[in-house]
Image 1 (cartoon, rainbow, N blue to C red):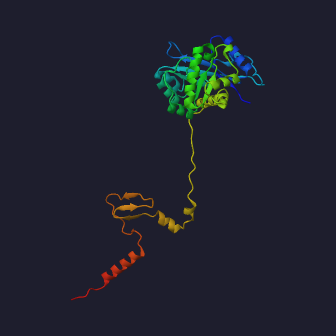
Image 2 (image 1 turned 60 degrees about the horizontal axis):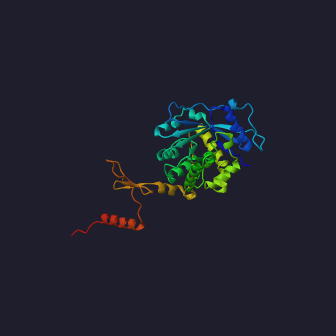
Image 3 (image 1 turned 90 degrees about the vertical axis):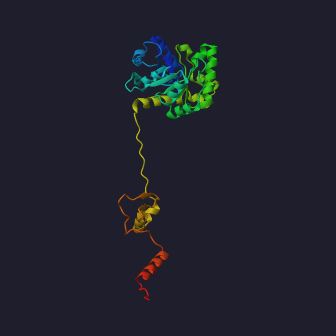
Length: 321
């Protein structure tokens, strides 16, 4: 049975409303929810606050509908970036961003979208649904983001509130699906009130309107969300990977050669100041070093015969007139 998740429940100052959001999500069958804290550095005096503690919300977690285990509550940070300088907080290793389970970025320009897909250490890239896209999606940055394990998030609650936003939501989603082909897409609610949350199967049906296939629509509220959470755990705990490569063993043909042939094969000869190797590389001798006299190229039988004849001629006394 699939484990459904909603990774965007908007955190507000009213804890009572937030409790109602979590209880409604558990009643609808969501096993995992994330409380989203949004930071917009364009506004003055915006700082990253500490995530909401689960103990402040519930003493006993609500039970998921149809299952005997309680709902899992995670924390999420979404940073709205409208300037490249806003990305510095995501590069700082000691920032409060590492206190959150999921980190998302909401780029406002094409340049920032490209930076988010290729360089930023985040888990989610948010797609705007409340207005027309200010740029066109391009395949290279999206393919890089998919290879890095990033997910693209679409939200559906604005489409419930207004017909104009509904048109923008469907249009922007279709533009995204033409490039990513439904890979690494998640659908969240972005709910601020309990009435704005829909069941996971209703959300999967909504994914069909976004251009997703039936399997991709179901994965958008289950397996893709789980992959994003695992990516977040890796981001918080892993700092590097060491890859070991096994040294190849010598070929069997080379092992079967006699010792004399191995020596002949690896033996290098020198003539006229140039050193020949079996690999075909040419290396001149160092300056001031003459070629060795005792090393010579191997001769054929004909060459040996010609050399013997020439030596016999040298030792034969010439006829005196």
